[in-house]
Length: 395
Image (cartoon, rainbow, N blue to C red; front, side, top):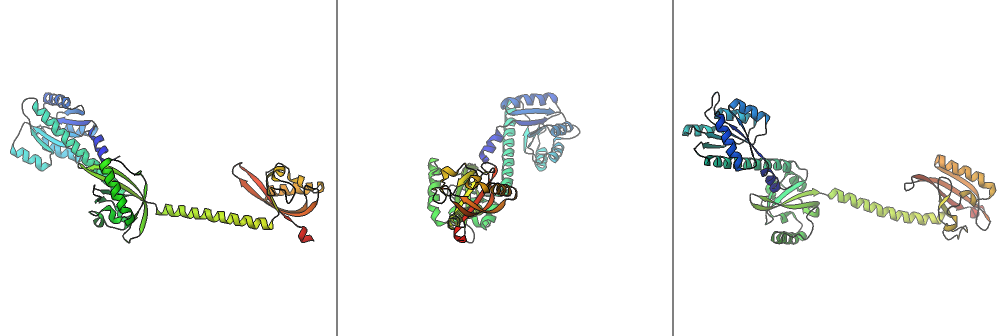
């Protein structure tokens, strides 16, 4: 939320007033007239400084209005005690005892405003206006203090510039990110820390926005490099928004260093490309030393088959998928193959030499090595076998 919106929100909230006067009828009358002037006003009353302190302790209070001449403690003594609880609370001395001496004491004690009681109802309008101005000013100051704390302690860089792109504010995170001091940056154009290739586009985009309100691109999370104090580019993500500072238009930027993120993304992309290259290489090597590989489900039925055309075994992928592994071996080897499948399931690996019966009935000596693959799609383990024709070796 922008500073302007925060201030506007605070100014629309109720204003809680504590009116302390030792004349109860006057206090109630004043409260009635004050509340009529503004719907936001909510007035509670007290007839002594002691009661006022109690009300201040137990109620939300935005402004105190107090008489001066009261028994036990006068208005200035009440002011000092109230400020011990609420250091900066607006305090108006509204008194019938007007004198330069009282006014001087009030100012010295830190009273926010001093107003002498008059006759008629006009005085309440004046008092209400003073209350409104003091509370609005106090709330705006509190908002500013709060925003300053956020800006100062933010881990993201925060920068504010005027409509000429001159930097007006930077926070410590900007200094740490780019290696400049605030003195180096304040008064400089934002273009000063931009690579030259971006400067013209920046000025054109700002001018277009200020004149038309239109943005040529989304101002949220723009990837933009800045120059650090050594002249190196630092890749950042920047989000801009407009705020109003004392009536002047300002552009407010939040800057986040994404160099590490981009580096990680680049490394991941390189790793993926390397993996794809290795996968291709592995397939070439695999195809050169292995005559057949298949993938079986946990029960031993074929899920995938490398001899798609049937050139090697006579079984195409279409005919092989769905067959049980034992069906590719002579009857005399069925028990052995079943045992090896069970061994593979239990231990995660196996090796077997047996006659593989190709589709035309010929039996060919093969060596099969098996391993287990975890299939996340079906949430179960698959059995992978690599077969090598041993005919050439035996001959």
